[in-house]
Every structure is written in structure tokens, then in C-alpha cells.
Image (cartoon, rainbow, N blue to C red; front, side):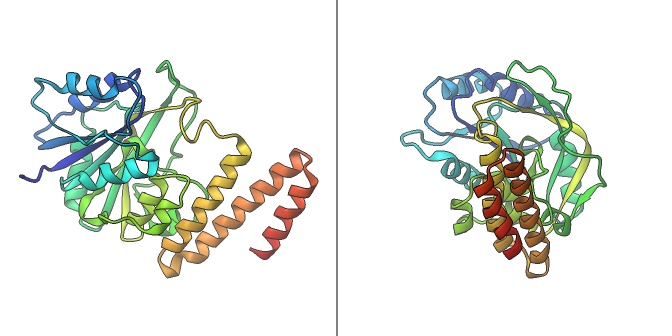
Length: 283
């Protein structure tokens, strides 16, 4: 099979209500780009897969649908979809998000083609609600045009909107490490694997639409569970970081514990507060 320039990893689960927007954003891409779409659906109980097939029929875009004969779970479905991609680059897109800029792929690929030291590229994204209305919230803070490992591994949260990321395929391992399979999140760990090998470029414009709903993995968590999950992810990411950056990771872990300490104090949960206080002293 001839290698396309870019593979779109379209990752879905019960996204029938939103998938038309996601597919339309793919079809709207301009430029002479050899593209394939790899659909990884985690055995949706709605008609997501059938809708995707129908939307791509007679478009000329190459669509590969991965088998849906078993339930993979979030981590398994992310992994199998990404490693099935054979393009020079992998563009990530979950089925409830969408692309909003017809030059997104062309500009990101051009940037990556001209700087082989980059392992990925991302942009800002607009936040939208379940009805596709814009939310007055910022996703990516104003920043310079490059995200270096020294900054990425110092953060106590993932600043990269998944729906805007384009990754260099030859930097993605076919077998993901054990840390990935222990993580509460898929995207943060994947970025850590690539950021350990090089920098990401940043394009300061909103090329994606990231949907905030109550049913997603992250948005369905309460605040306490979110902070706990972040700390788990940070500890796993720290083990993936280059040796010279691990102290920055440890500082991020301390920041995460401090946030949990503050939260438990605000909720007047004394025993939990004391536990976090001890952990912070030992961190």
C-alpha cells in the first residue's frame, strides 16, 4: 500500500450526533494533500460507523474502517487507531470535535516538512458546547511558536488540544510502553512519548473546535477526581521524561499535590487535608 502524506486518526465512540461536523472538517481541507482516514470506533451502540461510511462515500477520500468486533476501551482504541496509520504524519481527531480551518493540515504539514527536529505541531482551538455554541473560555494561553520539552514536562496539565495535533509517524512507537496503559488519559501520554524526542511547533490560530460535554472522560469527572487523575498521569509522564527534565516533572507533581491540598482545605475535609500535607512534605 502506498504511504499517504497524512493519516487522520478518527477516534469515535457514540458520536453519531456530532460526526457530520467532524467529517465535514476533514473534507473541507484544502491543498494537494495525499490523505487517508483511519476510523477507530470502540464498538459504538449508535450508528456512528454507518454515518462515517455514508459521509465519505463518493468523496474520493480513502477511508479504512478498523474492525468493530470487540470492545477496546479508550486506551486500546487510541493505540490501535494510531498505530494503524501509515502516513508520514498522524492528525488526531475525536468524533465529537471538528476542524474549523481549511488550511489546517496544509500549514501544519508544511511546517513539519521544513523542520525535521519537530516531532509534532498543534494550534489553539475554540471551545464549544454540546450544541456547537462557542464558549467564552481560552484553551491555549498566548505563547511563542514552539513548545519545548522543558516547558511541556514542567506543566501540571496538558496544554495541547487533541483535535489540533499533527504528529510525526516515525516518532510514534508501534508498541506503547507500560506507562501508557496505566494512564487515566491517552493523549497526554502520547504527547509525552513524542516530546521526549523533540519539540512541537505551535501555530497561533484556532483551527479546531473542542467540544465540552458532560459525557466525555475528562468532563464527566468531579474536581477531586480530576486532580487525582492528573497526578497519576504526571507520575507516569515523569518516568518517560528525559533524565535532565525529571526535576521539572517532580515540581509539577508537587504543584498537583498542592492543588489537592488547597481543595481539601476548601471542602473542610481534615483527614484528606492532612494526608495531602504529608505527601507534599515527602514529595
